[in-house]
Image (cartoon, rainbow, N blue to C red; front, side):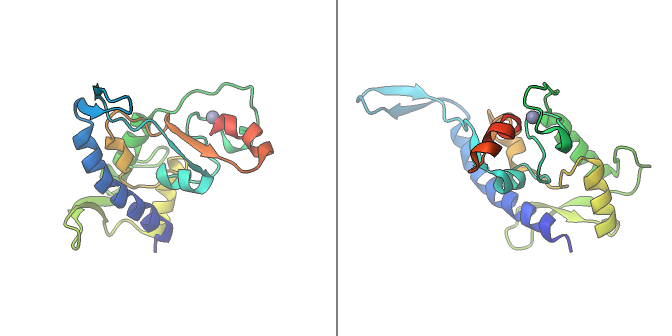
Length: 185
Ligand SMILES: [Zn+2]
């Protein structure tokens, strides 16, 4: 059960390991040797993430055909000249945490929590463990209510200096898709 959820979770459990190191080295400036031979203070920063649609959906923990930057609905992604409101990564995170750990889902009566914080037996790392209330039907109901966002701890939430919704960009092989959808991805 939850096959796709587990795939997304596994991806982010792996990214989380990388993020531990990244956050350590991006905490303060480092002295780095540059090609011109001069050493300079430099910040290590995650500038962005470029991937294709499926990978980007996995990285952002959400359904396909969902703009990462703005709230354009799926049936209006072709409106290249319409300006939609920006998405807020903190709002998405809060909604996911409320649904997972408080059972609070937009448009639904409050229910029991769907996840509890635990420890993965093999890696000994923190992991969200489903509660008995987390049936496939309830999981899908909550995910749909959140606009297709998985109830997963997105490892990029804690990437220093990085807004995972503002600094991602999807690549499309098709020039037509690049023109039409690229503006919304
Ligand atoms: Zn957009």
